[in-house]
Length: 129
Image (cartoon, rainbow, N blue to C red):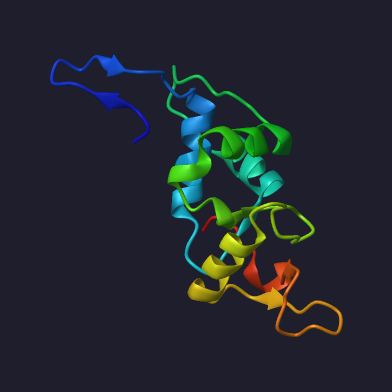
């Protein structure tokens, strides 16, 4: 997914670390209108079973956030969120457009129903199943 290979199978350019690939693959699986927190992603990946011999790189919420910041532009980044449901600082408008398009449950700002400031985590959260 994240690697570009030529006909011989040689990788071109930098290789994305295995943990980052797993984070990005999970971000792509989150259904439209649903979200997972950075912690949810880390916990889900830690609980996956791997065939014998496949290395399991662990990472917590901060590592998931770092992966999304470095490599997340090509996946639905707006579906991996903070646990408090706050919109990603600096990307609020773009994220909000995606949330509205996908029908992601939002909570209105106090006194400003037309300008949501948070996701409705109780309704938007996806458990990975």
